[in-house]
Length: 470
Image: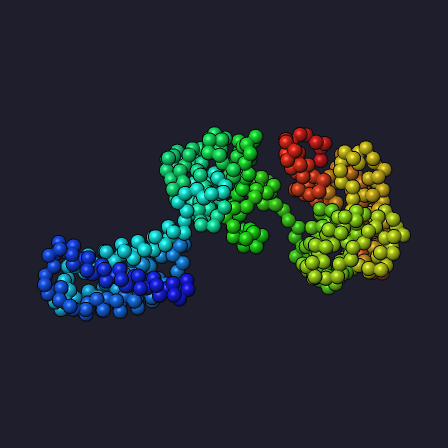
């Protein structure tokens, strides 16, 4: 609050305090005020003004944004006014009520609380809307708990482009009640009816439960509405979202558990200041791996990929961080001569090998390509890593390599077995050799080529249909 705003509010408060003293006299004596209290005696009024000005300021009532006033702020106001009148009452009672009636002090105190509190209530209400703003999107809130109340309060702010129309809640005793003027219209099962009747354009889910989200999404099939939810405290603390009341629903909200993320903290000791090479850097897993690696400030990061567009995109993204030297390289991991030249030039300390064919049905139809790209290329790259004295070679495998039932899984399992054998062979010698490591990944939610992007595109085109198995 700016200084001149504080000064204006203080002036208003003092006028109201003086008014409370005069009105209290009128109320106490029913208009027939004794003559001795009507004589020009400004002592009680000056006393109260000086006391109140200091006490109200000390209690911090002019350091608050009253458009965000809360119950705690109301308690501060109550304490400040009570202390002011408590001190004012001391000379009044000691003098026996000579300059101001003792019984009127309590009336004046009550009036002062009402008047000063009323001014702040008006400031609070002035920042909130009272009617649907022109152009605002009509919003339906799912959940009448604390999160729902917070969303409604924020959406009714002056600058919000959304307007809460109603609430759906499962508690029967909440029916026909209101939160900040917004009515509770029924249960979640009433959602389609409410959306059609009220012209709802957005549905905000304030209950972060995957089962509830799935239920709401199912109920709104065929309705032209957008879905949003509120960010979690975990997202706020990690800086993943700004302090906005709602955000779009993401696919991991429907997962039913926390997404499993790659933990690279243990790799910091051999990534920081080292040269790192990643194959398949343009893919979902390879690209995310590169994003994490640059956080540990390697001296150099080489991005190997066969598709120029995907490598170009990840290169631009990482280059903008300016945390290390990033080199994009277009190459085929099956080309032994080309890969040998790359390792000789870049001299990597660590190699992450993520390049692979991953589509199970495609590899069933084209097994030779799966063997060449997934198995033979891994064997070639591992031998080159030994030749050029790479310190660590990390191979990203799949859970489908466990008792493989597909060509893709079998090629990954063969690669694991080859690296195990090679690791035993090189460690038995006396010369420095790489450490070969295999890491198995399960399904990566929303990765490129998985069913989630496919289903998302189908939904945007009018409805999802069954694709081939993953």
